[in-house]
Image (cartoon, rainbow, N blue to C red; front, side):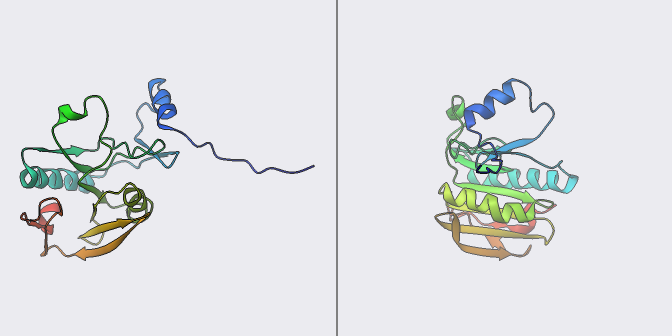
Length: 184
């Protein structure tokens, strides 16, 4: 008799939403990543401050015509709907009243306890979805990690910037952001 190894269930967005509507995720922070439902860790104070600081800076830099979404879903694939700390998209909130955005001009994760995950699996997910620019606000090393030029599931360009450095988002090349302004 042949043996078969147990297989993990691969979830779709539709199934994920039905589970949420049934109350299976009450009081939990979860994300659908590559068909897996992942529980996210609680948010510490430094992480929360980093999210607020970064959102504030980006709202000023991008201004009218852009929406800075904080911890809201991105519909990247039928089996992936992450909720990045920040995603900058074109348009206004009303443009996404029927469906979540399918891409972003810039995605940012503020990272402390999930640094390896954000550098690894999240980076691969955003690159594969064709997000041109992905930043990790690294609270452990107090720096900004910038990922650009997606190809397949990796970014060809990766750079670290110290607090005294400034970075210009690809979508706003004339606007300079001091890394220190993103760090709590």
